[in-house]
Length: 169
Image (cartoon, rainbow, N blue to C red; front, side):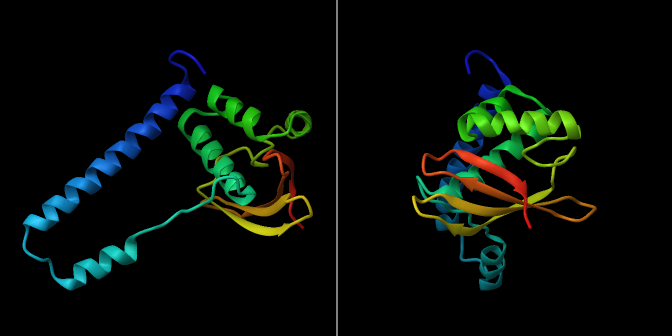
């Protein structure tokens, strides 16, 4: 991705948010040190609201979660068929799966990765199992504001390419 493409803007936006968050956390620590201690209830409430997302480099489940998170964000930011979404598909999807999804999309008039025409409000990825060779199968649950969630079976091979996206049974 060269020049001022949507993908480059998206990456710059993500980097700017991360830098702003790190700076904000650093300022929050120094500001907290110079102020009188807040009541303990405020600390407990803040801790209850904190979220943690974690992953491991080279882990198939993390790769599937990274792909779906970035793909949904790219679609939400820019609409369908953006350069970022194409780059994500190229990076994460096995070429044979890419061709299968293109055929499915022509037939169903929907996004093959999401199996839907709209963007989900929430998503989760749960490991279903590992096979010999460290291929990972996960259940991706996509949830919209209204309607039933969609559950997909997604398989990532040991080369960190998604080789299957299908309705979960």
